[in-house]
Image 1 (cartoon, one colour):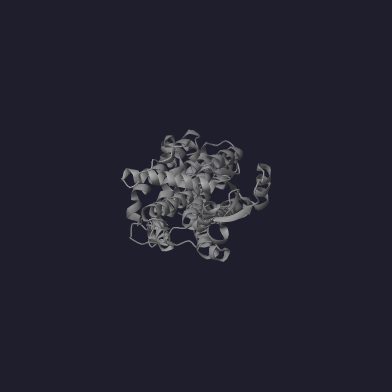
Image 2 (cartoon, rainbow, N blue to C red; image 1 turned 90 degrees about the horizontal axis):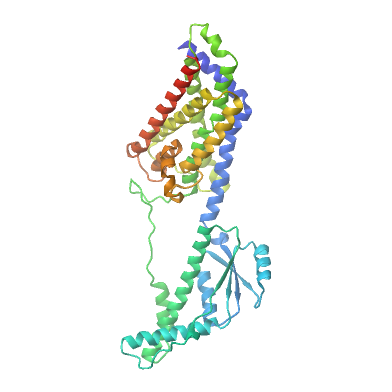
Length: 427
């Protein structure tokens, strides 16, 4: 026991002298958590001052086109910026750059008139089906409405562009529906529809309640901090490999293992001491990064991290995730010949595991062909365990199916490290 304690003290002194390693293990993940949480909070909360700038060139400026602009503004995600008539495509591109707008809409001439003709034709056809209209509906192709043109910046991601496009289509459908109702009312009653009916049409729409599904029945809305802080904490724990992996290689190449063979001790004691020491480092990372989310985020205008109610489960998941990260770093260090190999392979492999594990790319956004790689990444099981506590309000017993694969991966890494030590005659 005294030998193990002496090795732990030695490893702690080595860590405190490695300022580069400490910065990679603590400062880098804190900056990542702050920056990415801020970006996501700004992206997904497109309300009030964060509305999407939308350029509109209205070459029609009639009743329906103006109603369309008003409806787009009522949606709540757009900040309307008017452009002059007959603005060229090149000028629109310049205006988009000046105003930092990523989308622009061109409303063609006679848009309102053509929509009215189309609605009138549709109304006549509908009333004739009910036997209320004797006049044959107009089948002239001239009733086709000129298309709206949407300009978008090439940097706009496809998923984000489709969301904006769906919002614009919804506004168009609302305007057309109001015109159809108004025209049908006028055709039947031979008088203009009262404004009160149109107002009821807008206010009596079906309301959608958004309720997050949680295990404990609570309705706490998950925020960007709940998603990002656990994810990048896992990433930070696995980045221990840049310090631990090179430390194992250094002890092998420096002759420490040979000197230990001449003493009444074993190189396994060195390996165990490093695991205990760096597991303490991993738990320190958890404490520091979670504290950043709880206390620092509100001062930066970011949503605060809500700690789960199952504190014991949170500690157990953190311990197991940290042990898995340490086991992986030990296995890489044992098989690496140089510190450069350990650092290079370790850093790249951690980024790859993060990509497969749902840290860099959400699980739902991955193709089905990546399902196998997702399940073999230890970061996936760590992330699912944390999400079960943070987002679903579960307890440790609820996430045991995610913890068991993590324990099996730890055993695999420990076995690989043991085989490597035996192969190199280090034990």
